[in-house]
Length: 315
Length: 312
Image (cartoon, rainbow over all chains, first blue to last red; front, side, top):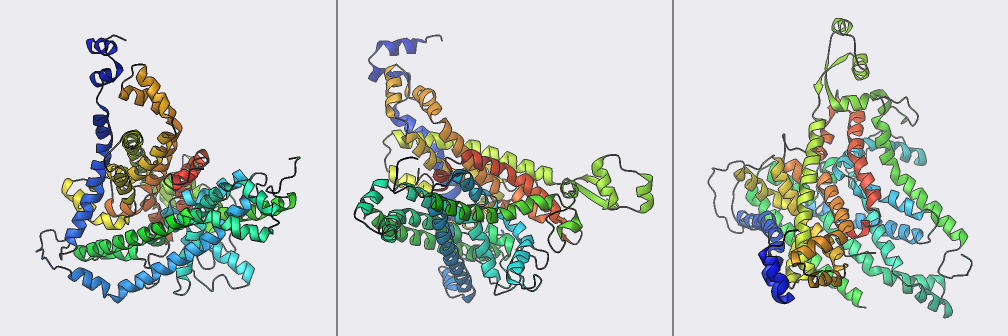
């Protein structure tokens, strides 16, 4: 390596000064390193968000870029909050959120608890169970419509095999009563491993000594489970619920491919409704207000939840 | 284990736990195995009742996936005998191959956009994560939270202005536009994950390097980067999987030239509805790389899916 004059000067001076001469100052480096990330996020997230807020007060339609744009104040918000269809989609979303989280918590925790018995080969099986979670929801969701076909579908065949019903007699994605459950089943299949992995981390974080102490005190296994295992895993479980809650509130790809929001509006979750308003009916102003309401809801609920989570952690 | 431990499960407990977990794993694997199997079925076999577990394997699905076909008269078929094995499969159905399908193109789009955005988000993410990990930055916690919060927005919510923005800038349906968008979405994950990995590298290493006369920058790429290599690799795989699987932005912002596979595969149709063997063949080709990555990632899975919130 050839030494430049700068290098020689630097090596002759004390390190603190040398650093200033040879390289950039710490502060400059820090800013050079952080700036591109912050800039890109401002451009692709914050700028669009502000734009959405602005559009939400107008009657702009993106398919008529040269149409007259009127400032209509809060009328979009008013319309959304009094729209009975919007409340129906909120109900569908609530149903989906509640039951997916319910099943995933129970199944995920149970699986983690079983895997934590450390039977031979548990690592391999854990990895296999994780597969569905990593795959493309749109591609897999589309294939599930095949499994759900009356008569020829594998799902219907298996259900019929165990219940004795006629496999052609029911259609999971075609019937109003079944479709909300069809999406719950696929989401649970896909995301149970997520809750499982986090619970497993929680279970593994409990030191053996606590159980040993409880055993010395002659606490029953049942009591140990409820007074040690459950409270110690709870913060982890709550974190998993937070992630699932946010993700499923935004749910789009899987359900769009599975049911497309139908039959009727039974599985029209808010994201699907929003997509129709924005990109099919082209009510850009209206759907911008809709988007803001959703974002505020997610953000608000998540903040309250995080507060609760921190309380649990402190205990 | 020879010594008696009360926290270690007994042999019988392990056996029961093992059976239950393996049972669940096999059920969970069924839809995936069904995708694999359907890809190798002939059309009639794929929609047979009862569903066929044993069948004569056929590459019809894969041939349909990669080609477009037209029906021809018997005389034409007679006059033009098939030359290759795939032409023969098509020939037997009374069709001839008209040309390649769009699947190859769409798959390549997924590869280009996936790798492009992964490279960018890991590159930018590493720089930012290093700065957040090592320097005092004003409002650091707020900035980090801001970066994370960008992930909470429903994609459809920002898709409206992004659609308008891309239209103005001429980025609609281009690779560059999608790479930029996915980079931005992935940055939150890459910054948070990488910050966790870099936090774990002792500062003493760099301090030693600085005393040896390295500049900060040299210390960063000669000392920290090699130490963070595993972390960077697993972060990259997570970003790649995200871009690979992403659907909402892809379906709204691309239609022709830059369309990726997830919006394309569900639209593969044959005569009278979806061509399930071809769909399954496409899904297989598309999903298998992710499964391989999952196996490679298994030690860091937890970190990746929780943005580094849970580490072990």
